[in-house]
Amino acid sequence: MSGKRHLVAVLVRLAALGIALAAYTTLVVPSMSDAGDADIGAGLVAFAALALAGFGGALLDARRHGARTALAWWLAVAAGLAVGWWGALAMPQDASASFGELLARDAGLLPFTFALLAIPAALGAALGRALPARG
Image (cartoon, rainbow, N blue to C red; front, side):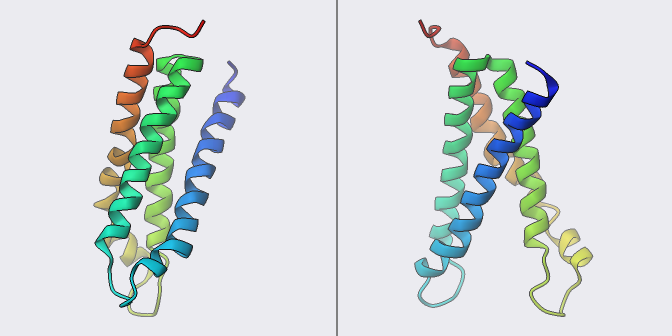
């Protein structure tokens, strides 16, 4: 498989997750919290969905393209999603903090967001490799 195809595969998965996460955050989260405050349940649902997407996506990709390829794709997707979400969270809501200040404040989220997708993806790729080949 050429480098261009690998890049396209990663970008398609990243775009799908990014769009789904943005839609969830914009459309669903506000309706889950009637009081307008933080809703822990909404975050847990998003975390579970990301973990499930990483596991399931890597499992299917491992069955179709091999475990190494699947793992590489999903580690790249996890890194892209972590950086993208970090940047999205740092968009200033008001003048109380700059973009740079918000980036610095939320830098600790990078490893968490990466791991949230990467660990289940690694497990999915390993399981996909262990399953009998499609025949």
